Length: 289
Length: 310
Image (cartoon, rainbow over all chains, first blue to last red; front, side, top):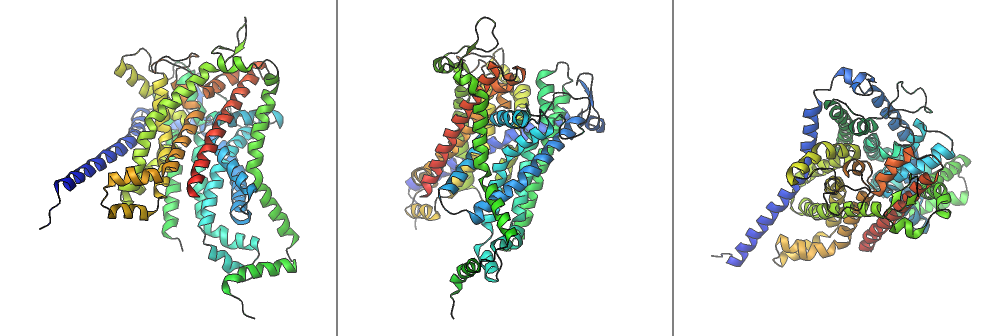
């Protein structure tokens, strides 16, 4: 009979211990996220109502609802996606289909990496200097959305690039062989096959920009506005900014209000993320390659 | 004429080129695509340009290198003598970043090891989705959590008068940079060829031995890059540290003292500084420092990741 020596048994025990240790660490790292969301839910749900969602803030933001902030966040997110999505997708098409392996391409990649790593407050400074002052947009929805778009551009480029690269090269070759031009190949073969991946990236970036605060702080968001924005040159309120305001700047806000605002913001972002995750797994099961 | 199938795409392209039948419309669109491709270079140059442009009068005017970096006196609105020293702010940033990385890097890498080496595929998917959710929580919500949840906990646990301090900000930053560290670290570990593990296993190595003696050296650069990206994240974080550090300009002597970071200073003071004034320009100069710091950190991380692949 073969029996493992004591030495080996010890090793096995050690290994089990290691696995248990690592799994405990991992589990406890994700516990806070769960606790935080549950806790926000318990604290905020008492203030959450239809009125809270659809009323203006009144009495110096200590009562009423958050309707203008929700509207403002939608404006900001939609305009920023309208700008960053086409630009990002086309930039990714250039990188994946046209760019040769040379220094220029290397510099572009480096620029994307750095654009993604620039602190959000530096983006805010850029937005203030470029859009608000230089292009004379003033502190407006347009300036804030453009700043958000610049922030989101590297995210969209990276995710689009990934899904473009995932389309097998043989698809392109087949298309070229029947006489299609490079552009036709991109339009009829590459893009239709990578749309799901692109969409997932865009939805993720929507969630990201909905929560961004620092970048819109000086470019277009007001603490409090008694009216809804009428055009892109108006200022607006935003959910993230509203949460910052009522949790640090205003005295006498009922406890449940900031909790409920945070809850609405998180639910908005998590639902975006869930859509993205669902899209991804749906298309993954239907993938043809 | 016989044409090899593998050569035919090139032949087709060459034939097109020879015929020169590319319509003008297509040419215009392709030029447009190229311009869009260059947009990120233009944007990063524009960011640098506009920050330099706004801070230029300060940099050539009352900017004093020694005072700026080595004085802890930041009195931008003083009536007696205006001073722009960012040492205290720099210390705040460094302390918060260092402490948060001390928490997040070991935990994050342990977690990356677990997810990449010990998890089954289904559990791995679940954790990845959880990581995405954790990464999606916006910084202002983290700041709110710092004020409402961690602040009272620190006061109770350590019996200190105020819970908005360096420790609080570090905990929040650690939680915020964990998803990045875990996912990049996991990518680095998965990039180690399966054959390495099999070879080690065949020699009778345990998982622990494989992890420390095979995977760690093989994925060293990627893991370092993961930590560096975490540093970059912590360095540039604004709203959460603004809300969590307790807002006092001083060099903190312990982790229970409040402080302030470079990013938080810009966010807190830009709104009240008159546009075009010296204070305003000095804040843009801080922005320039931040831009350079993040540039260096990201560049190093990129070199580490690229170096490994070659």
